[in-house]
Image (tube, rainbow, N blue to C red; front, side, top):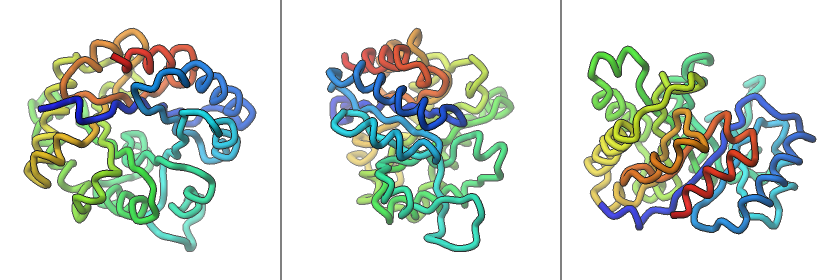
Length: 256
């Protein structure tokens, strides 16, 4: 296992926060604080209405802009949805797919996550694919089986070549927005299970090269220890990404 083969990616998920004017200011401040930190990739995934302002504010900086969801059809009668080509033309480079809140509140399934992933990759977007167990599954001792099955289902039909544009974010559902965090060892162990599953699907070399983030209440206080683990290649950051100074500290922790 050679962690040096993988570049750390620190991505912020703003969820349903920030107006366009607020987004412009926050992206600019984040860029100013992190542009000299070149040891990792920095991504901010913003609400749809903020994309134009965020892309403009990020021009000429190291910050990349992502969206938080994408539909699997190219166009059609899907009120409220956004296609991959729409995102691409708006300047989006990344998209989050399968976040636990999308699964919990909006009926996302492994099948629809897989369809959205295929559509995003076909359009040329980079995917941050989220998966993780609920509290009852962790307590029942079936975390490994759950995340391995999600990995297989969510990536069904995804080619090894397409995997170059896939980041996997392990986010234990019980740690999202709760303030609870998997211990560094728990995060490393479960990210390792995902990596072992990738090795079975695609081979050891691809598994070794795939970026696997931790996404469960990582913040400026615990980031350094989590990022020190061999299987943790970055973070998908929620609340802390809304405060540029806190987010910058996480990026700073990823420089070692």
